View (tube, rainbow, N blue to C red):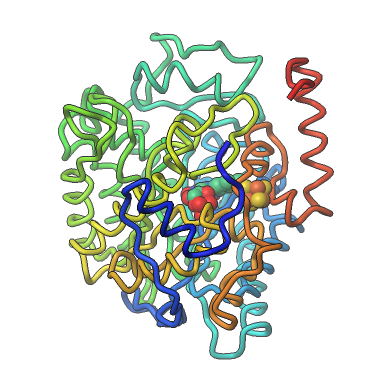
Length: 466
Ligand SMILES: Cc1cc2nc3c(=O)[nH]c(=O)nc-3n(C[C@H](O)[C@H](O)[C@H](O)COP(=O)(O)O)c2cc1C
Ligand code: SF4
C-alpha cells in the first residue's frame, strides 16, 4: 500500500525527483479559470468532471433519483465541462442491469436530467455559467452484463482478455475462461450496430446535450476493435479496418448533428497489452507506448470535425493501476506494481503529447485524483505547460463534487473532502452495487459498501482476515 496523505508541494516535488518522472506544478492556479474553446462551444473554465458511472438507473435505463442527485452535485460544483457517464446504445451492451440506456422510451427522462443539470448550474454558479454537457455513448462489449450475469459481446478473441474477463468480474454463471469457440460479432452485425450509435446520438442531441462521445476506451467494444489485429474482414487487421467503426460512426453522427453540437471521443491511447493484442503499444516492449497509430487516428478525427478528445489509457478490469492510480486495490485485486505517481505522470505525458501534436484541439486529461490536495497545482502546471486544455476529475468528483468551485474560488482543496484513492467505489461497481463515494458521501454509500464487504466475507471466508 502506498502513502495515503499528500498534502504539500514540497513532498510532491521530492517524490517526483526520487521517481525521476516528469510533472509540472504551479502554485498559481489562476490559469484554470480560463475559458476553453471547443469547436463552436466554450467551456467557462478549464476544469472537467470525468464520466463516472453510478450504476443507478432503472431496468429500462432511465436515470433514477441517485443519478439526478449526482448530476445536481456535479452541476453545482462549477466545472466548465460535465462529461456524463457511460450510456448504453443497445440493451445487450449494458454493463449492468442499471446502466443508463438512451432509447425512444427513456429519451424524455434524459431531457429532464439535462434540463435540471443546466438549471442547477445556473442557480448555483450564476446566469453566465453554462457548462458544456457531453453524453458518453457506449457498448460494453466483452464486459456486457445486461441482466447481471456475464454476456460478453466480442469482436475478436485474444488470450489476455479472454482469460481475464470472468476473474475480474466474478460470475458464477460464466466459465472462468472465454472458450475459443465463443462467437465473435460478424461484420454485418457491426454494420447494424453503427445505426444504434447514430440513433442514440440523435436522441442525445434532442435531449439537450451539447455533444456526444463515441466512447473508444477501457476495453469496451470500440476500444477492442482498435486492437483487433487478429480479426479478419472489414473491421480487423489493418489500421484502416480497425479504426473503421469509430470513424464511420463519427461521420454518420456528424450528419445527424445540428449546428452548435459537437462530436468527441474518450480515446484509450495505450492498452499496455502486447502485440498483436494491444493498441498504442511499442512493438518490442509493451510496457512502453507507441502513439503512432492513436495519433494518426486523432488526425483523421480532426479532419472529420472532432474538436475535443478526452485522453485515457488501459483497462480498469485488467490493469487499473495504469487507468486509475490507487493507494489501495479492490479486494481480490493486486497491489500497484509501480508508484501511483508514476501512473499519474504517464497519463499526463500521453495527453501532453496529443495536445502538442494537435494544438487546435481541446484535450481533456485524466488520472489526477490520486494527487489529492496537490491536484490543482499539478493541473495548473499541466495547463501552463500546454499539455492539456482541460483537467479532468473522476473519483475526485465523486468524493468532492465542489472541487472546481474550491480550486477556482479558494485556490486550494479541503483535505477532509479529497478522494483518497481507496478503490471502494470501484469495489462496489465490480461487485454489482449502486456506486458513489462511501468515504466522503458516507450516509448514502456507506451502507451499500458495508453490504458488499459482508457479501464478500460470506462468499470468500479468507476476506474475514483482511
Ligand atoms: C466508479 C467508477 C466509475 C467510472 N465510470 C466511468 C464511465 O462511465 N466512463 C468512463 O469513461 N470512465 C469511467 N470511469 C473512469 C474515470 O472517468 C477516470 O478515468 C478514472 O477514475 C481516472 O481518473 P481519476 O484519477 O480522476 O479518478 C469510472 C471510474 C470509477 C472509479
Ligand atoms: S471511494 Fe471515494 S475516496 Fe475512495 S477512491 Fe472512490 S471516490 Fe475516492
